[in-house]
Amino acid sequence: MPKIAIITGSTREGRKSLEVAQWTKEIADARGDATYEIVDTADFNLPVWDAPTSPAWGPSDDPVAQAWSNKIAEFDGFVFVVAEYNHSITGSLKNALDYLYTELNNKAAGFVGYGSAGGARAIEHLRGILSEQQVAHVRAAAGLSLFHDFENFSTFKPTPMAAKQVEGMLDQLVVWTRAMSAVREGAFAPAGANA
Image 1 (spheres, one colour):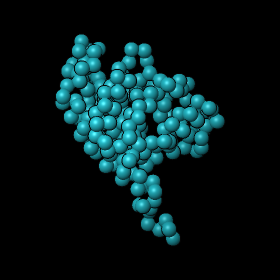
Image 2: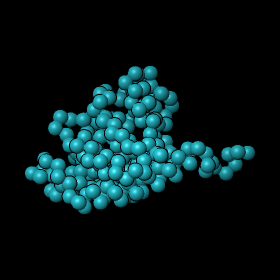
Image 3: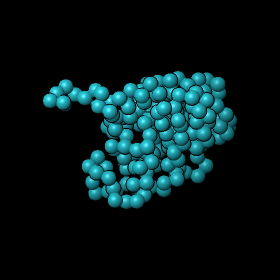
Image 4: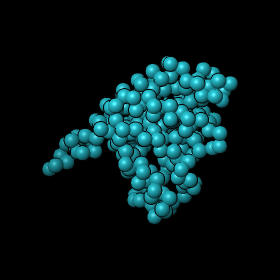
């Protein structure tokens, strides 16, 4: 079965990201179509990325970076829990992604966003970043509203519609995760690649 990481997108104190990730995992685990694991970016304590060369050119010598890289490389696909800060993704998620490249190439991703507009603006920004990292992101996404899925804008109480959105996203993500596995195995090599 595919192995899919549910990645938290916020590391700050009082965040809802881990709670949303745990709720997403409960929905995902009930499906039985993949193995799901929460990867909490806060556990890695990544400093601001300032390496002299891009991770696209080779792995970092930093043990913290290597631990993060090795963890992400274990997975075939990803669900990003996307908190919206100032109409975009959090600095901590962008920083975590800047450490990566080949670990993400030719894999699939889906999104569970949250914010005043369901995290939609942050998800759109994340799509652009992941496209550069050669990640196939699925169209369907779950958007949790601070007005409807959080009581008093703080206590997480997702609606049944939010759970249905997660299901729809996972339906697409699992299919694309399997498809991208074939891409990584070379089943769809460019014409002339074997010449």
